[in-house]
Image (tube, rainbow, N blue to C red; front, side, top):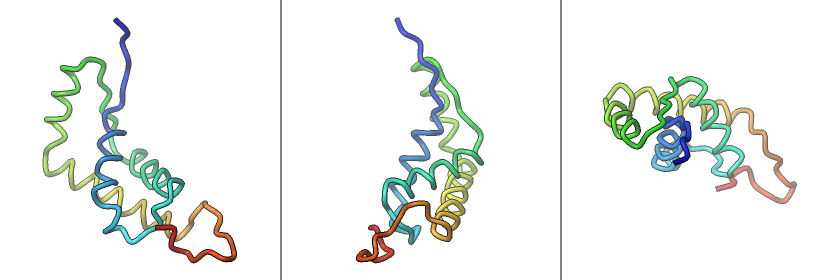
Length: 99
């Protein structure tokens, strides 16, 4: 049986980003999405798990209102920063909205 170390926070942040991306008023291209997720993950505590049982317990722990608030705050801050300093290139014939 292969044992794999996983940061559960990565999947939780990406799921939450999918839920709120329309409300963030930012570019939705893959580069910007990954920059926003990266910003948020660097400001949130990691949640490493090894077993399926550990994943279940960690997911229950992350259902708290504080975790939700912290995650949303980090995503909104990340979207603001990425919107002000996008790292993608816009072709002259494209508008700023990559949506």
